[in-house]
Each structure stands twice: as C-alpha cells, then as structure tokens.
Length: 141
Image 1 (cartoon, rainbow, N blue to C red):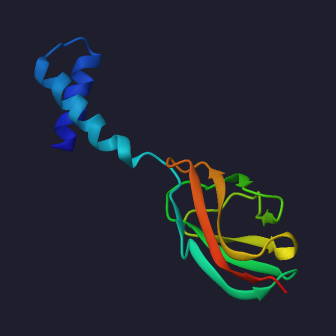
Image 2: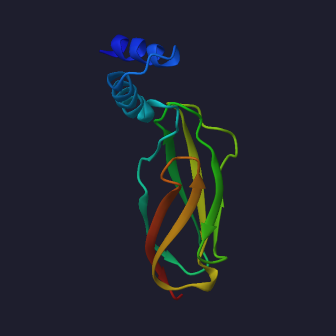
C-alpha cells in the first residue's frame, strides 16, 4: 500500500491527474504527519510533597524530566507564583531517550501554613509546557 501511494504521487508529479492518486497521497500524508520529528516530555513525579518543615528552611525538590520523543527537547523558561521559589535547569538540549533534572528551591522564610504551589516550564514539546507541583506544611515557629 505504501509503495502504491508513492507511485500514485509520482504519477501526479508527471502530470497524470487521477483522483485515486490524490486521495492516496492525502491518506499517506495523514499517517506520516504524526511521525515527524518532535520531542515528548515526561516527568517521573510531577507532584511532590516536602512534608512538614519549620519556617525559614530552604526546601529543595528534584524532578526528573525525560525526552521520550525523537528530536531534542529544549527547556526554555520557568514561571513561578512568588519570589520564594527559584527554578534551576540546564539550557542544553535533552537528547531523545535521555533525562535531565529540574531543581525547585522553595524558601519558607516569608510563608507559613499549608503550601500548594506550581512551577511552569515552557519547552518545545507540542504540549507547550510542563507543570510541576509541590506541597507541604510550614510551621510558624
């Protein structure tokens, strides 16, 4: 079937118009479209708990980000909800099948009580961004 589709496409290029060739070409392009090279991001645990800590402690969480696609994954920028959170990650491309680590540092100096926060990282995955969540309890003293 695949060979027939190519042959029909070639007939179109030589000027032999046939409806069957057009339909076959469209079908082949429909099935080959998803096979184009693109990264696919996977996060092992995108939701983590830091448990209970005392106010003023620095919490560090590590997220493993894997590229399960077939082209390099680029982590571009991060967005956080407050200045108490910092994000560190490599700007180097992540090769297909490889992983990198995203480090989230949460400074509890200015917060207390139950914490439930998100970090968003934009990337070149067709989904557009990664959402990382962390939560825990910060005691007042």
